Image 1 (cartoon, rainbow, N blue to C red):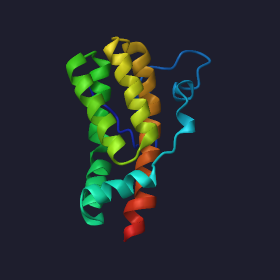
Image 2: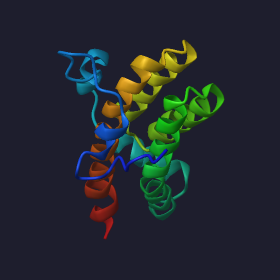
Image 3: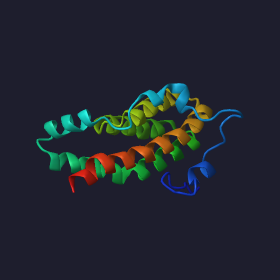
Image 4: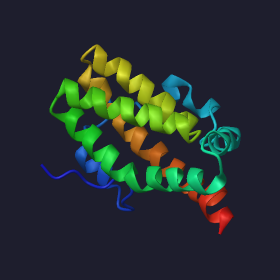
Length: 152
């Protein structure tokens, strides 16, 4: 199965993911995710302090950015085929790494998906993947703008 890029401009994710239930505009709003910032600059500052410098922290954030698409594809594929161990590994990786770079919305959504996977609720989990793709793309753009490009 070919899994489209979550970053594609043609909405490739929607071709892979099942349609949301009729009348449902996405699950993220149900989880209150809009109240969270995309990226918390204070967490990035803490990361710099923990890693003894901005250069190392920027490399970590850059690696996070570069791995986003691969992480999402792995997670989406595992949820699609209901591969519990791989889905759990992928969602926990996304949750922890997102928390480390201050990606509050994405970490929250990953935690919400983790709960769904633990209950083996793959139908709702598949629907939540569209929101994870959307907020993931926004998070990557925000990290580039406020942290990676700002340093250049």
